[in-house]
Image 1 (cartoon, one colour):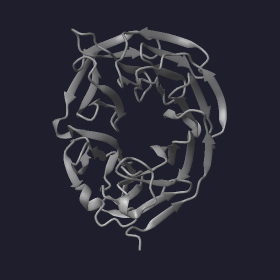
Image 2 (cartoon, one colour; image 1 turned 90 degrees about the vertical axis):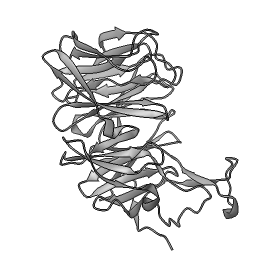
Image 3 (cartoon, helix red, strand yellow; image 1 turned 45 degrees about the vertical axis):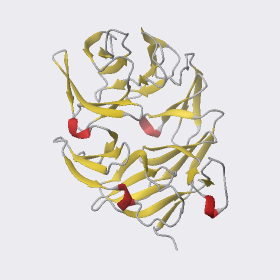
Image 4 (tube, one colour; image 1 turned 180 degrees about the vertical axis):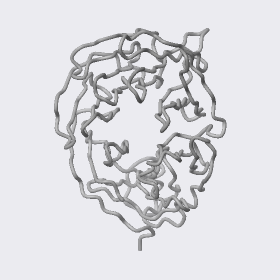
Length: 351
């Protein structure tokens, strides 16, 4: 007997690519923009995952640094942050409007650009050299003039991710691989950037905000609990140990216990979606942060592995599991999954 109630999600749309998508960016009217790990290609899709256009955008993708894609919320500008430059393109990806060249990012490092909520400014990070820290810059989205700059952390140690907040301030997440992560709050006032480190959020991975904007969720970095924070106070108001979330799980018996795999999302005010190390999707009740159901998207498959990392069907030798899910996203009120087969799959939300 299964421990958790199962929520079966029928597949809505699917599109298969020859390379794995690495960025999926929302655009107006349900459209999305994508780029890929090993191809200099940008693809625009409509709400039904049908291709609107594809453009070859040359750039360097080396040292495990893929170009990071972002777009303004009005869809008028596209930003590509690559290993040695930042490029701003028009809405059709046909014309480069501005380029910022910089030194090369190191292995696994880099940062996508961020468009402010009013689309008036573009935020980005430049890699530092041996004697200078990484640098945060803000440019005017109309003139591309640099409005302000601010030193960040030690050079070439972090990958950065910007996150929007309900009140227009910005959160900047800096992650040093699996060693540590830092969450900072940014503001631009009178041409000056202010940066505040949020110590209570250290070594956690940012999820998203609840629809009300009053709470946000963070995933544990290692064995720590899942945590919910209030906003704008940024105080930890709820947490749950991972053992309690997976307590007594019977569907995937293995020598290695399942745990949270860095990704958690508010689906609505009452439900949180957790991605597990095995590739499972668990729906938690916000009130007690315990699992109320396991989400079963159509077409997602699991493989059992032994201690040596080889597939096995012998239940006595199962060490852990892995599904074919690569990335999980909630975009335009849809659940989007990328898979190891190079697919982008869409489903209705599980609530």
